[in-house]
Image 1 (cartoon, each protein chain N blue to C red):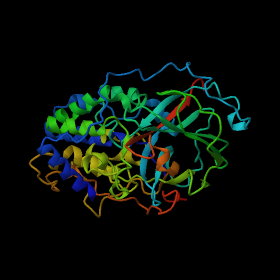
Image 2: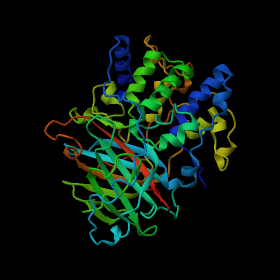
Image 3: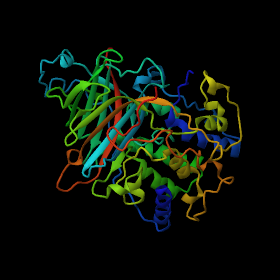
Length: 208
Length: 249
């Protein structure tokens, strides 16, 4: 898996004290709820279509939000979950410290690693670098392997998350994620139950 | 077979907490923490965003965006496959392309009609009326519209598919609940799981719990140039998905 290469890249970056991420939003928290009444009538032109009838005034309040898989709620206390679901990726200032505290305090990772992990995961969105080769696409590869990033259907994000938190690979000593020693580094489910399609819409047909 | 609800976003924290419980046995705070989802999403699983994907299309210069939602996360043969309709729900994919983690472009997807006969309307990518968590419909000219469960648009422009698909996620959820049984659901087969060793099952014995599951997918493919701030000099962009509930409904 390319992830292992990515991890080693990360470890190398840590060992050399290299800051590999630079687009974190470090500004103070902003209100996640801008005035909902400000722009209600802006830019509308009802096409007379039945689908568009009688909805111009409707305000939709965010119920759920997901950027990075597994991560957004990983280190956020239950009490803050509802708040998290009603934020946006610019929640960095509010939630990154909780993530960093979780990685160090609960998972026992070095503070330096927590800082790197936090800066990769926040702002919480899937980052794509389209200037890179599509062949380098994969979750977090934009940060860890100078890649295209994004998230592929085939990415084993469960193992990635487990490794990130539990593996001693993330320790500068570079030890391996040995079965038995670190049994939580993989769930041993490495692929989807059915193959993905090579053509649009790529997700496999529904089970019937 | 009735499948229990679960919330994949909590799996890793729960595992971390479980590891800590095992290692320190003094983690009352974490053990007491409850990793169930928010009551609103739990009660209204159509609003649960399962997964968001962004990956290169096979055709160079094109990108695929996927918003996977539950309806709820149910096994095959459910009769209730449906998206939330626009009188209640708005689905969005949001794009930041100038590095401030605020949406510069949004895709809005709304649905009408009953299960099995739903139609989708897509607006965007376009600059949103509002940045943030209280949103209104873009209105104006539709990007695409048509029946669900159908490929809309063109392979050289914007393509859209909405409808049930195989749930692309994979995980040994049963093993997970053996590691941390206090995260198991209160009903269904998984509720019977009891504490096991703090390890996953070995390769060959592990089971993808989500095998055979479907979800409600929104899949868009389009030229990557439509997502970046400057098509001549494409630079990083961020992707996230949201669901929203119509205020007052």
